[in-house]
Every structure is written in C-alpha cells, then in structure tokens.
Length: 126
Image 1 (cartoon, rainbow, N blue to C red):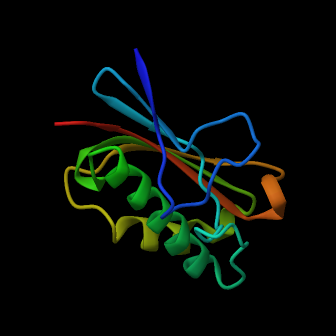
Image 2: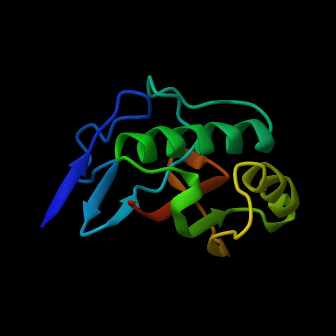
C-alpha cells in the first residue's frame, strides 16, 4: 500500500504526473526538488541560496510525511556543473548530522527549468 504526501509548504506537483512524496511501508520517497518556492516561483540567486531552498522544500515534505532529516537514509543529488559540488555539499551538510545518509551525486547535462541542482531523498518513519 502507498500513501500520497502533500503539503502547501513546498512546491505543488500541479498537473505533472508525480507526487511530492509517497509513503510505502515505512519508507518515504520524495520527489526530486528544485529551487522553486512553495508558491511555485523559480528562485534566482547563488547556488547556495538555491540549495537552501531545495532543502527547505524537502524538510517540509518530510515533515508532512511524519519524518525528518534525521531519518533520511539515502539522497541523490543531480548537478549540471560539478564545479558547484563543494558549495552544494556545504549547504546540504548543514542539514544533517552523523551518521549521514548514503548519497550519490550525478552530473547531468540539463535539469528541469534550467536549474543547476535537484535533490531527492528516501527516509524512514519511526
């Protein structure tokens, strides 16, 4: 059985055929978040500011699912420019403490709406 997660504190899926997150068994699978505000506006700014917005979106989604960053077990980060890795990693790391989630970072040619970073997570519910 799976349950859809929705919150107005993160960008809505809109007419796109996906959910902000799905709970299956005790796992929470988030959408890939980009630097949209909860109102759906693309955030301009530095890569650090954009990464903070992504992490805030993911935090809101995880909270709506009844979990938190403390229960994240896996993340995937997509970047279009690997030279931004250290700045993204600095912001990302500020939201976690040890033991850190497993993670991969993948450099891709393009991301939706021309953004430079997208992050998704898998968490467990207590």
